[in-house]
Length: 228
Image 1 (cartoon, rainbow, N blue to C red):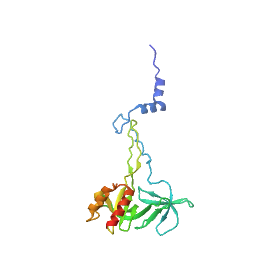
Image 2: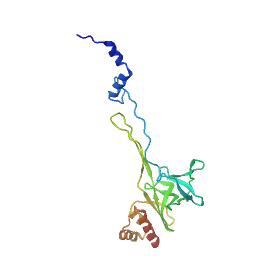
Image 3: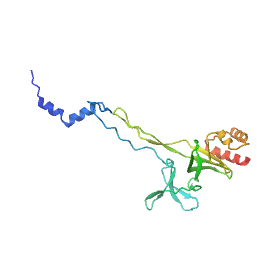
Image 4: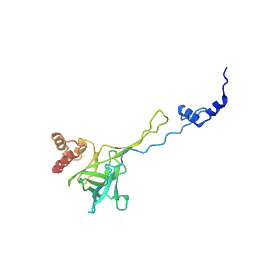
């Protein structure tokens, strides 16, 4: 019978290569029961996606100032960042009710306003101006939210990073000196015009107005303006 040499076997058992191989082949457990190998959970991954409606700094003007500045809108935190390429710095534009930021390239206007959300919460924030008639004003709220990620607890699953995603745009209407009110459908808008709700609904139906499309809302605001 061949003799078994114990010395090489013992040395192999305590070698780093052998220990690592054993750990890699051992199922991972989150508990601390005797005999189980504790493995630290994978750390969180950086979020993907973007907090901005446009990642580029674009030329713009602020209300009461003809100077061209470079800005981009952070729709996650609801503020404008201004870039100073000469100094290599970025700063947040001051917020003031009634102030506007006009994108010179597209003509888009963002107004800092007080408004009520779908849940009735009062917010001071930036709204994209859809229509700016004297009696009827319509705004669009651009939002980005953070979808939570998931950290893998073992080697059998993959971690998922948190992701910034664009939410559906929200629309708001202001009639005369009333509040800026959230609207989600044609009835919401019609109810803002007491006594003439039926006329508004008939116009929407006849002209196939989509109350989730900015161009259609511009047309609707012109009609409401004419009957007030």
